[in-house]
Length: 396
Image 1 (tube, one colour):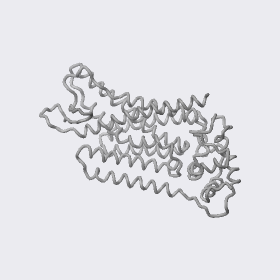
Image 2 (cartoon, rainbow, N blue to C red):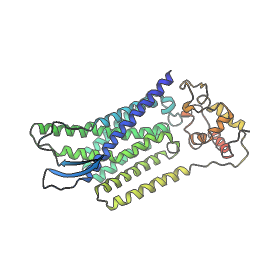
Image 3 (spheres, rainbow, N blue to C red):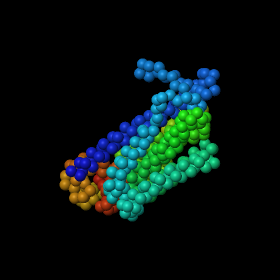
Image 4 (spheres, rainbow, N blue to C red):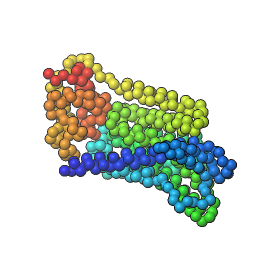
């Protein structure tokens, strides 16, 4: 029953997280595009520009004010809850999977010996510290220089990409890189963008002229969020692909994705504005080259060889029985699982051969399995499994 409730909680919160994320990212992309599509067509100093659109059989005209209109309409639409619910559901999902199951999914003793309390404490404090450092960078004099600030923020994210794999399991490290960036993005909305907009509205209601600094600050943070979106999405789905988070150079792969994601957004931001400069033209090819380089890096890890003495299946079965069956069995003996994770079971010779490819990706090319290497699978055993698969994964 506990396993059933855990799976449903995981599924429903994951569903809610994806839905909220779609809404948040959708509005982020839309408003960055809208801002880029504005054209100055009216001789009105208060209007920054307008954009005409057609969708669903209707025509829409949107105007943007340089600061704010002289009088607010009765109904004003705010865009904030998408960000809040994306972060809340994401944090809830992290708590259910990685905090509740810390010993299985968060902690890897071969990376760092941590208690559950220590592992969770580092997680929470690092997310908070990431936002504080980022916010200070934006408020310092460097925040007035776009290029320098971009380098400083990249260095902060690089610290997370390098640091988390030194503390947590590969899967948890990538999830935390995404959470680190996502926390910065959500906090931008909660602590900077929305408060600034509220102060602007309050000034208008009092008949005062709003401070344009609020709009400038909000635009800066919104643009940061826009450039960080694609790397966060990659980290969200990375837990299905140990070839990246299980690699020895996982930190470099993560940084490569941050760079590639930023380049892709840079191209589309300029393309949508109708002002494609050389930096925009070269951004997309550069992103493709960066991703190809990452593929080469991960491919270099593949060293399966069928050379040597034929591997007896009895030896393979012994390794699986000692290192894998405690979880991947019809009747798991690991107390953390009431049923085999993912439905993968190694009770029979045929089932071991059936999942040979997964064994390679999870336990040979990477050390993702066993979880946290709780059963202490050795490097020699991983090599033997790889050789067996390379020789055809025979069970006779």
